[in-house]
Image 1: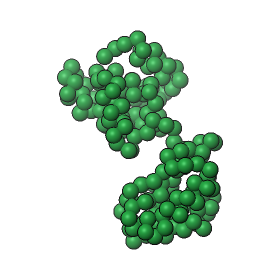
Image 2 (image 1 turned 180 degrees about the horizontal axis):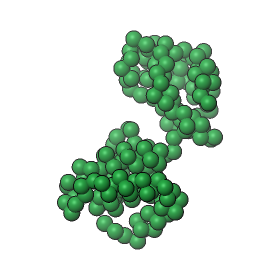
Image 3 (image 1 turned 120 degrees about the vertical axis):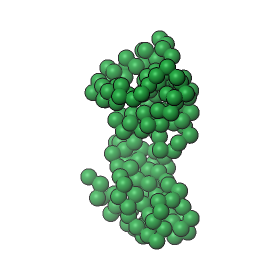
Length: 174
């Protein structure tokens, strides 16, 4: 699947992030990649998880790099990225805030909590603050319904959150 555009983009990636590219290259070199595209396709999700763990997100250059290594079309890679909500093509903030909007949390005021985060950070859901410090998102269910409404910050769970607690939660983020 080699092409001039991919080679150019992959070179850009290597020049911008040599250490990260080397880490992803080493990881992918350890995979059982072969000539069978169907088998290689089975390695795609784990490769994307690793790539996102290394780069923090999946820009086009990383998508092209993974596609090239697995012998897949860029559209196949993008199709997986756009389907699974875990993957992101935009850089995330240092502190990733997710407000649970599942039924129990929503009924107990998650919408108001989310609105307060939006107001306080001056961003909409799915955006990152200009300084790159915070990303705001919503989840459908955290599985901690007895603590509703729930907010997660970098994996830490805050329960029984009210709009009045938003400022304190943000102040804990250094």
